Length: 273
Length: 246
Image 1 (spheres, helix red, strand yellow):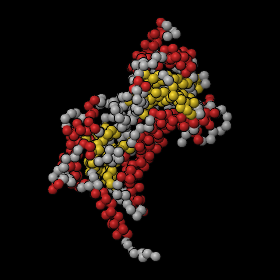
Image 2 (image 1 turned 180 degrees about the horizontal axis):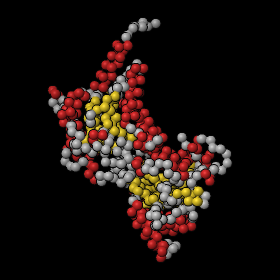
Image 3 (image 1 turned 120 degrees about the horizontal axis):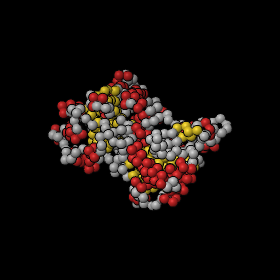
Image 4 (image 1 turned 45 degrees about the vertical axis):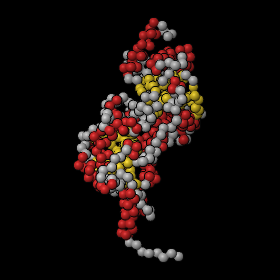
């Protein structure tokens, strides 16, 4: 029989925290910040199939760093919870705060009960009517929740990135400015000899929760639209849309978003046939 | 979660809930048009004169519901959530055929209630993003109480006035219609249905209640504004002043 050594609870927690912190710091970073038109997610991601940033509900987005399979589990649970609550009650009753709480419970339980904690850090963001109303929640591996002031960075050398974000970010920025600030912050770390790197468009995953949209506000910015935004050559891709789109709006080209859900739900309880 | 999975007390329940409707769908050159009248009936009474029976199922498809109102609305909400849920979980939309199959199995789940008179039969239409030929991207699927789906060619109608709407469409439909022409044709067909079926409501000019008309094209789904449907409906009514048979 193998010898059982005593380890104090403090030691066990310290070891788990260290494991999680190291795992998260090894990965690439993600930045979330609010700007005048909504909430912007920018993540360094070499894969175009495995997403670090995704949609949870109408006005709620999700960004994560760390182990893909672990945060993907959490994301699926979050989507399921949001969709179920929205179906049972109303779409307006799905909130970022409730989701952040549920994620915190799960992460906290896994941290204390499992032998290995989740090596993930998560952001749940909800876009509000104005940048001041945006909610950004940071969830860490041990289940703690922090309400962030309009911007946050996670994964990799998050502290250095947060420093750059803090000095450059303003909540009234345009989308183009916000993308510029986010990419600039991401590229300050990891360069040779402390110099800034250049991050190509195909290494970035960019998405927004669009404040002006009705219903599902999450929108990915990919391909030519992203390149144009990074080069700062043209207006943001929202320019071809009316400020208050008719409901529901369709996405030109690839279907990355779906029907304006306010229209689907605007008259609950009415007999229909 | 469907009421069909819960046991119902025995006996016919058809007169318990608002019922009936007419929905028409027409495939056009660049998409599909679906329109529904605004009437719900309970026996010989009008239960509601401004209900909305045509809704977007997701960004590229439409669903119109005929039958028992309460079950229909629950089925439609569940269908919308299922499509959105799949899209968010998998990161890609279901194919149009996949959506139709899913709807078919949901209707099949309601068979028990349907046999007691609480049937729901939707009409499903959408723009098929995977279609090789863009002129054939607008597709229509019909169902029966046991499921389906059955793909229709060109046009289809469901509900109590569907017989008359389909007869009208049979004579007026041409392949390759523009979306604008198909929209007008759909409102004409609903007028013909209302002409001969008491459970179908015609354009209500005094209360300004007009059919709900939606389109699904490469740009996504679009619901015609009240002003747009008013113009079309008033045009149809004016035409019928000259020639009641259309």
